[in-house]
Length: 352
Image (cartoon, rainbow, N blue to C red; front, side, top):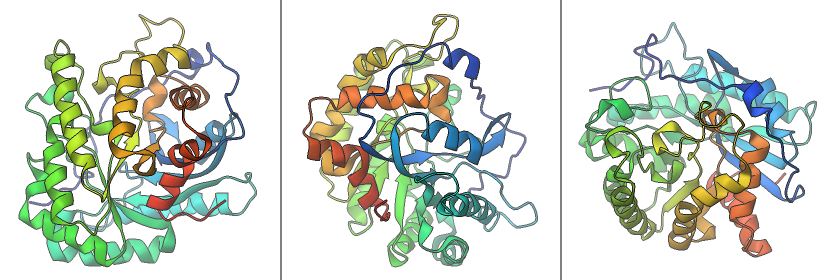
């Protein structure tokens, strides 16, 4: 079975951002000089437009964003290519944005300095030709691959288009494809739910030479069938996070909590006539962030924006203020790791 997220272009996950609502709450920037590498954002045009200009507007809103990493999101796939090579269009598109930023005409930040694309690892050994094509398109900017594996028995918590099979990370053909990443010096981004983390643990243990990073703190679900089970979910999530942290090749991204699936509901514009403050966000997210850092350590933890997805909840400026509040008690070297150095090292980015 081949997974092609572009195979159902008419399917859309509900997504909307209200910029006027976000503008109702503004804050002074906390620690504006602290260097930040944002290791997780997207670019797309799907009802809500978030392309180079929109990313640039966010990254110059007050925080010291030095560079960013783009994560695959099914943007600009080639229409005239088969399923395996269609994702090259996304890498071409983002590499163009990276070239714009690298010109220096748009400031000192290096946007899209790293690119994480899609290659269907269920192709097994045949994925080599796709990985090589991505590297030809983007060269050293191409850092790795993400195959989302989010699955739950409740289809209402679905977060990505297309059908993803249960146990994708355990599939033999998938693992044959995964084995090719290390040969090309590439990393793996994992997006899955809290109860699926054991699958990633098994994968990381099977391939200890390939670095993996868990996106969005491992997706503890907080909606629908899980809405009244938050403590139960949290206990299972905590145990799974601690077990994954024992894999030395595993890293974690601290963010994604502005997504609806997490159940914090700060994006509910009926309940919240004005967006909540960074203080409110930090208070709600603290138990999760502190557990991740306590288990992984600062050297394997990195804050992420997950924009524009998390832009449903707050502005870019407020989001990074929340993260800075969460890190307020850490030392200067620890903050450097959390906000820039871990991401720079994981994605092999140049110092800017």
